[in-house]
Image 1 (spheres, rainbow, N blue to C red):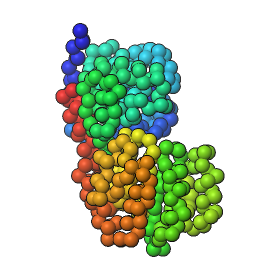
Image 2: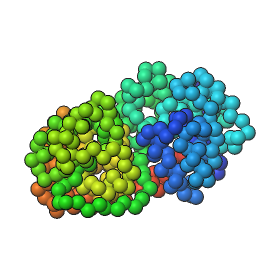
Image 3: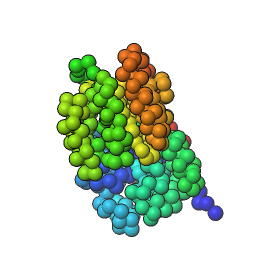
Image 4: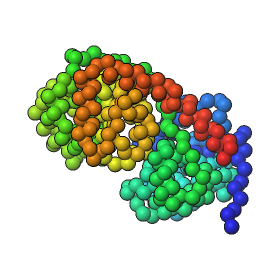
Length: 362
């Protein structure tokens, strides 16, 4: 028989658990956006995370309460014990929320210890290989004790259903705080930006196969991020073969990167739950050429804010780039609609309001 779920007190803080050390990745970047954009209309937030996490700094800057969680990477039993041992530093809370699949069991344990409901956010495919079979099973078992699991896209929600998740599932798209972007003048060629050099599944090999044809068009290709070892030599060879046309820009501040490209190339070959880069492109009024992997179709509207193509049909993506190079007015109109859609759907206040609603209502 299923145990009754405790009621959440909307006047008490929500404790957000994140066991990630250091700066983390996309999920941690989204939580930082939430902390910086959280309004007074929502419940107070308490972040429970390792002392080395980015959130110690963020909470000091935003005045959210921070509680140190002495966890170790994937040490499930030790981490549960450390979570249960949280003492006077943790105030009374009305709910515990796990910010990633790595903290699902911690939220359940702490919620039961405190007598409050637990919930979580799924930022990844539930069967992602990097989590491993044990982590996948622990996450699914723990989520069955949640009153709600929030998925960052409809595609992620469907993946959770297919993977056997039985708890109530909801969708809240990620959101972003706006920041100023200064447009950098250019010499007339369309600048294609590819911010996926760090990870093979972001599609560099597909882009490399396009380069000979792209170099026949009026475009430059700008590569962002430190190249993954698997293709660092290939990237160097391209920049040497096409000097001034293929550029390795390395790590750049976000405001700089978005200010020096005209079109975003998002070429992932594997499931992407909900890529923040697609939202940032909309904020910067840039059209996207994006593969239909995961939640891309929820961020990009085909032929309205950009172009979508199947990763297995790479020539369709190349054809979309060609269309943009041949029609400057199309590029401008898609970018303008991408900006309008960002303002209507993907600002941080939309995400914060949706989370506050789920935390109030369970």
